Amino acid sequence: MDQKFQVIIIGAGAAGLMCAITAAKRGRQVLVIDHANKVGKKILMSGGGRCNFTNYSIEPENFLCNNPHFCKSALSRYNQWQFIELVEEYGIEYYDKGLGQLFCKNSSKDIRDLLVDECRKNGVIIQLKTSVEKIEALAGSSGFKLVTSLAEFSCTSLVVATGGLSIPTMGATGFGYDIARQFGHHIIATGPALTPLIFDKKWLEKTSQLPGNAIDVQVSCNGQRFSEAMLFTHKGLSGPAILQISSYWQPGQPILIDLLPGLDVAAWLQENKQARAEIQLKTLLSTKFSQSIAEYLCSEIGMNCKLKQIEVNELNKIEQRLTRWTLYPAGYEGYRVAEVTLGGIDTDEISSKTFESVKQNNLYFIGEVLDVTGHLGGYNFQWAWASGHAAGSVV
Image 1: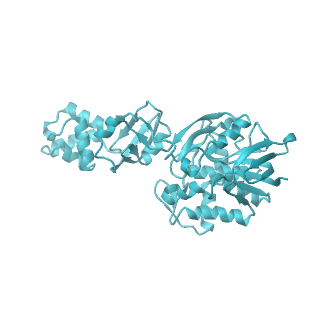
Image 2: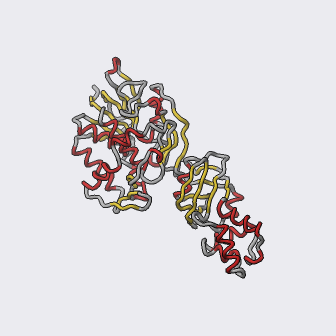
Image 3: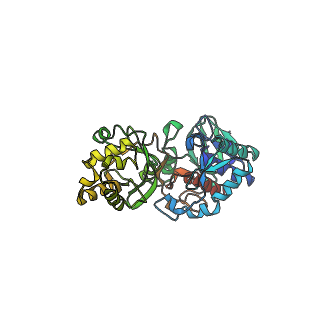
């Protein structure tokens, strides 16, 4: 005999828990199922253990989706201020790390515990260490039957909040895409997003003294640009600017890096040549970069002489290298470290208001499993809260 619920949610992450809370507050009987041994694993490890739970500035332009209008409705109906209000209700201290990025002062556990407490207060049942083995749509649009490793369940509304493929060590799988395909949905090609970029052996040999160095840059690719920190690593490049551009970069394409954003480099070089003619180029560059980066740049430019010895055309070459450094990454570091997954379930087949499938009544998809990917900075969590709330308001 199966156990009956009005709503079953597969996935005890940010979107699934928000959906469960919202539905339960409407008096719905809600069961959350997850194969993991812990609720909200990605919440706990996010933001270096401090959970960048939202951003002061949430705009549709902060999200990638084949249908750029899809996310507007949900984001406007449950916005960042509403989640901040919930955080403040629980007395959770937070701070703006910069660029409107809000982090817990204490620990990511504060956000996880908030969600678990809200579930408990509203009667949500959470069943962990339970894998779904089979899903069957019942005749006459009367709901679904789920065969799990624990028991059989049935429900009127089924919500898929299984996340994407990023960080498989946290239990990420493509199960949500399998469910979508079962019910006739198209999957936009997936890939790692917000991930470091790796480079070939030749480049790594040339930059072997640079890992650990971080500088503020502007990096651009495919019409997108981000001005944040970049970090040299033993595999290539990381840091917020690189993670951001990785969502737009495609293999084989170059990325363009301005190493001195906001500075008129041509004028700076000319002024220093006139005022400090005896100074070595490496010494000048050391006023803007670490010594190891300055040495590397001189090596790449192919000169390290006094400024008075540098001709005008050579100054132009230096300016080009500093403001339009063109690099060809070898690839992504991949899902192992990617914060989110690019692509997913085609949003043209999902209602932007209710998140119900247009192909199967009472079936809903929310969160990262959809073809919606936020920028770095709290946007993916806000998408989880907004999409979870939208579905939870109608299931």
